[in-house]
Image (tube, rainbow over all chains, first blue to last red; front, side, top):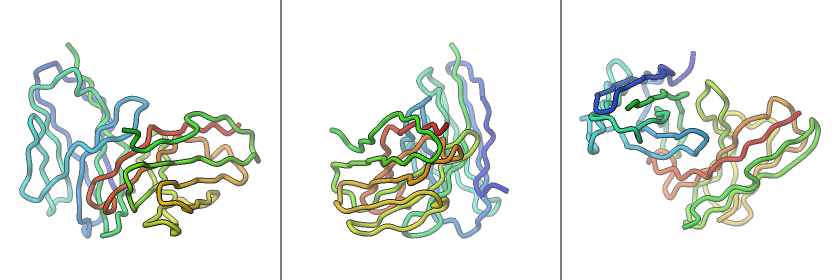
Length: 110
Length: 114
């Protein structure tokens, strides 16, 4: 079983629509949570951290559910430029052992 | 703003050949990491370093060696390449450790082993 699991998609989203997807993690001792964005054949880049109380960054909202061990990402008013693969990343300890999900592909269409 | 630079960007090797991937960062970061990314899998940590002169094994270290002789450079070596090492390799650096989420990645190095 993978330690971090994501629906690979693709999620095909009309421009302007809302899309949401989850990621589940297996280790209940996980301490930190992030969403990274990776464009095709490019390097991953940090999109946002995920806090226990949930947090927003513009059109992006992230939620953490520790009881059910999942995090979610919601994108409102999708733009063509949001097309990318979104990586769920879970941190296990203080020095930085991170577990990466395989990613969820989002395709925003005109 | 160079950030994290990886060389080479592409390489084709024959089984048994050796090579070194170079990662250089100009942000004075203490922590550096080497990951590999394969289709359908998340990035997996090969080796990491928490400062100049230090290295440690990650999740998938077998077949790889690393060195961090200078703070800004982190080298990944393949002594005898195998087809299973065909992958995209990403170097990353972080000022205070990856658990902060502040990982800065290089553009990746695509390695094919025939």
